[in-house]
Image (cartoon, rainbow, N blue to C red; front, top):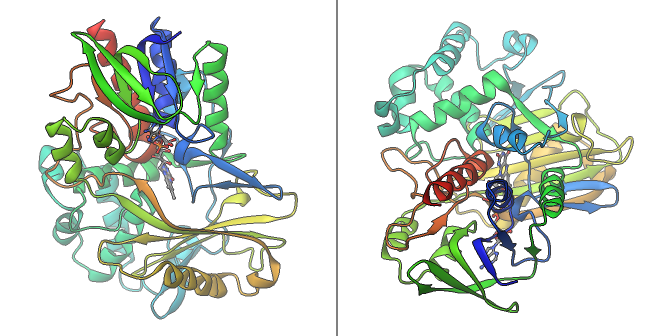
Length: 422
Ligand SMILES: Cc1cc2nc3c(=O)[nH]c(=O)nc-3n(C[C@H](O)[C@H](O)[C@H](O)COP(=O)(O)OP(=O)(O)OC[C@H]3O[C@@H](n4cnc5c(N)ncnc54)[C@H](O)[C@@H]3O)c2cc1C
């Protein structure tokens, strides 16, 4: 069969969810994925009994993505993370307590004389009312207007990096950042057992049970308008297929390659700023300092969390630690410098980790999301103005939330748009 109602190009979370949602509406759909496996950036590799996500991944329990997954009958399995005995701040001048537990709040040196201001700042973030004005403002402007103390502003930048992955306060939207911080503070996240591959496997099984064809190693190379209401999609190795609707669940640059004639798409894609991270994941026989589950840079861009403390990600008795650098636009360090920085940070937080390491997985520059949510600049629309019945979905389009929440919300939205078109 080579005729479908909708063809979906890209088999990550967005593409697979869109396929299932459209199939539920009675559509004949098919998914074409260029790589050998489905899942995209939600893929989990298995090595020596460890489950390796592509960098640290946390699913927002109260986010749009969870609702979409639940609506498809998927209940992600995992646990909410604890902060450990000593949540730790890595500062330019050493270690301090990160005020995430009552004990750390009172012991923290950086909060001396600022404890009340810190609590007031947290309340302001949680109690903010979403507004058009906040979406026009940058995160830096909001911090400057609302947090008078410089050290607290630096500390709240750590909070925003942790929840958004973005390290660009001068451009990121205050409205979107506050919404994400609030989501994390009020409903927390889940670390998933067996990694995010769990989600991919659940989606794939449901799609297979529904009879949805899912082709891997099927790179789409071109899309042609065939008739007034149809497209022909060509692939590197597969035979061409035909469809009334085409959903591009792929990165923005790949979408532009497939639709070179679409000026509206090229223009918006050109302006997008990706969020990127360097990730070092280590598998350890033993965690040298079990008190430190969570260590974050304050004034430094660094993330350290023992994910295996909450989720089943390591062989019995072993530990999986995710570390990362949130790459700022003006961070021109080389991959080797990022790696050396993360290893030295581990030396401080987990002294002796090198002797315990059985696995080190370094990903020098991962695209966490293809579009920072910028102040006063909406992300591209799902509907492509000059290409009727062709749509874009993923974490870079104008849909609810951030990160995977946006990918999954955009899958929900495109299914609704297509069902209205009939
Ligand atoms: C280090 C890191 C940490 C992250 N942490 C979090 C987190 O904590 N919380 C969170 O919510 N999100 C997180 N994310 C983001 C999350 O992983 C992504 O938003 C989500 O997986 C994106 O899904 P997607 O389907 O939109 O895109 P992708 O997963 O990128 O899928 C796109 C698919 O399209 C395929 N493709 C591309 N071109 C073609 C073509 N021409 N033909 C056919 N197929 C094609 C690709 O191979 C790929 O499989 C993180 C990402 C990274 C990298």
